[in-house]
Length: 578
Image (cartoon, rainbow, N blue to C red; front, top):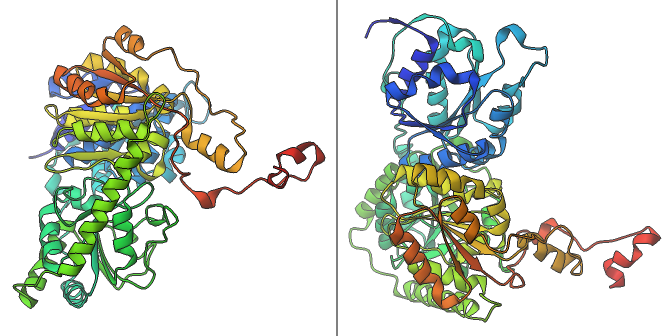
């Protein structure tokens, strides 16, 4: 295709079309209205939200489900800065995304004019790159660069364009993505793959840790074959409960906060760890339940698509920079060549299965303890039993949402979209909306505490407007319970700032916004209520009234200390005087 005369807005929209962008999420603003005017004719849907933070959370989840980089936009200044938290979350989640960032017009830059902000400086630390359009004729080229970096570095990129640069004319050649970026990463170094297979073949107690890369590369089947060949337990990384099939006999559950003790005990004894598609994050491998489970002396084989993550947190025996699936396929080939018919390690398999059974009994027993009116663990247990296999489940951050890590299990096409290590509340519901856009026919469930719900319930209006039948399971415990637990353990039950005086019920609120609402205060009705909500295919708020005194352990016991006070007026607060 030769160069054609067009406006910068047209170059942007045509580049979006080449990237198969079919929608953009945000709130309308005059800064990008010239581009927005082209969307209906181009076939790009504009999805308006109620707060721009929700836009990037939606696109984060959309990208995780589809593999296509999501796109969001806001008015220059406050509209774009409203996305700081959600873009930072996507950055920590390694989610490719392009943030269209119209900025103040060039004739007024530096005058502190209306809605002016140096957005590039604001976003530099929370994106993989910031791309600023230096001239209107570069509008299309710079957008291609933004997409190239987003996919290459696996994270959000800010595309900053002064609002007057949407106008004018240029000669542009619209390129197909394969002409300016390459997605394939290959299997990694052949020498490293040979070494990895050799280490695994000689392992006595190998354990596999599957991370998000396994999900993105659709590598669960080959991971299952490696596990079978080695008789190796498969643990999944923190908040990636969908990284392996829960109905596979080698699945032992998630590690990290509120993870599976079965997985932790298996890891504790491992002599070789095969980490596939994981950066082995510090927070995701910290001791839990007073179990220091990540072995210091085990030989680690780490496969990651990003070379920056190899050996970043744990020293490795073999590092493989490559696609999780392609590298795993090559390792399996080498293992099969060394031993075509490996014997099952019966003793190790029996021990693993016994640990799984013991863990299952422990979390069910914990859930069956009476609550007033519902033990939150019981609610999570009943939800996990009622969630369909093909469902997408989003989880927020907080006491109840994080406890879901013990209960959520995924087989088949089921997906887990979690807030991950940025740890901001208000993620799960807008993420669920984005996941529903990605897979319109899938059941989508958000697990949200009432604290996080206060930050996201306004998006019920978006769900109603866009006809997105997401079910928000709102755990009503009337407190910021993760912080409440810290005040129990470290501050002698002095509760400050933890109580949330919610409305009498969220059901009439949901109905006033045009959604369905169901309130449950009996544990035996939780599963039935979820099934009813999913069957309706309408946006629904499922309010679960749970016991606010039944709390999970602190996230980080090492992050707080018992209070010491020296000034006499505060002496009564000193833990030595309790």
